[in-house]
Image (cartoon, rainbow, N blue to C red; front, side):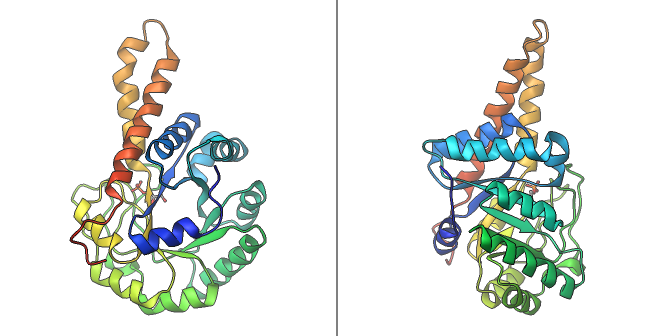
Length: 287
Ligand code: 13P
């Protein structure tokens, strides 16, 4: 069933059980994420942005995700637009029934990011959808893991974040606190003091992008400091590819493509379940 409104996001913020935003590229990844949501009974977001849309076609991937959310009798699924710089694309997704969108003006000067985000919020309100925006910039590629490293210069400033949230009316804010898209050579350390200061200054739930491979203590530190949505992509991609590679030797002689796709789908489900298991505060976290 479709997860409308901001209740799940607010509940995630209140309890520290963060909402996972899993990136889907095709039928099997949508199915795997849906199966994980059905198995665990917790709210989950299926999300996609420019890269997956380029691969699958925007309309096709939108429909796959929306149909999965609408048709599942037990899963509570939101459908979310990831990293969009384009108001027309945001409108297309809102009109199709997306439950939330991310407007990414993080590459723009501050005032222009505010203007773009405000307009996305105005459009989303008409459709009862919520909006995530981003302040600060994340290193790394959203679709390919590149061993990027975090830089101090692009991190989110707490005072600016407060001004941004007040000026835009945004529902959730993605932050740059040392997090990196994709896997990294060395374990990522988050600037948890900065994150705590942002949490203190900003009244809306925070979003952590780039959670693949993040050490679990860093993740739990983030959950205890206002992070209510956690984006994961590379871990699902790796699980999918590993499963496809492992299934090829037995599939190739008979050209059994279904067994390869099924292995990929099931691996995405298992990887998503593993991530969901991590997205709860530890008893020692000062939440
Ligand atoms: P990872 O690929 O590091 O999990 O990042 C995903 C993400 O932030 C999508 O927006």
